Image 1 (tube, rainbow, N blue to C red):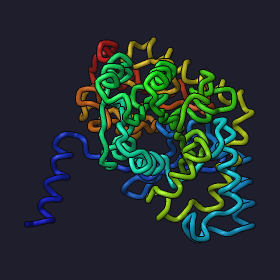
Image 2 (image 1 turned 135 degrees about the vertical axis):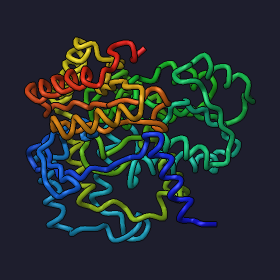
Image 3 (image 1 turned 30 degrees about the horizontal axis):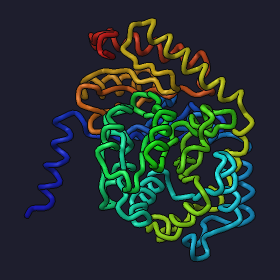
Image 4 (image 1 turned 30 degrees about the vertical axis):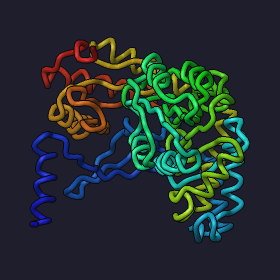
Length: 407
């Protein structure tokens, strides 16, 4: 086999379909986010505004977080020095897990190198802990959840997105004595819609199933202390396992689960994705703990975040642009064609200094290609004006339909 040719053909297919992903080199400047500097391929630089980042609240630049990281760096150095089992558990890791357990009202928490790994490692391990486990998964769950469920070798059922009636049918068709787990999300990141958490928990309790809730796009931003949508609804105590990230609203890096002490102990003891990898650096753990601690009391920042998102959606709707609005902080604008999506993204960047990455298949279904905006509290009204003007101008320039695409 000509391996190099096979690789070239695979990459060429992406180019032909308009789905080839291009990374742009940006540098965030401390204290100036969402402003950044784009270094172009020719080495020249351009000031830009980041409109697609996951640092939802700007905590990656917050003085409280930076100071905690500086202090930890001076106190302990760079890396953790090992896996959690072999010299890589520090006072910083323990403090972070205590903050996270407290955030979700759980007995314990377990920190992983990313939320992807937390999902994959936990969901792939649970069938070893509960032989015969059947996992019921929402069809739009994140790739990390799908991969973890796929790899575990156990039984799985996929229910239609947010379709509680379909899930009930699947549960009723299975052995009532079989162990069961329902896996779903609170905020689905591509459309920005919410999962029917309470109805799913009710169903789980009715059928004796465990619940696994991914709150990655909600922690820090929803609930009176930033515990996510489950906290906002007052039902976090009814969810068995909550997954979250430290790399989005908390502005640092890493992921975790929060659950009972026994559940966390079992996953800690059996999950290869936790056992056989170097733990996050103490400096990262310190910054994450500071961010979690701060956001437990900063409701004003959460309120401003929601206000910015609402204003952007109102402005884009006013132009007749095809946005999807489910009431969350995520603002998707449907373009419906991968080539057009990439073209608009490129022109926004080069002509207006607006950076928003195109979202294409397989992240979203074909025909729903989009630009996904994530306004934050630090996107001020002047930046918003610039974005709205740029979108209005380019939409007309590209002769795209307005509201009909959002369906």
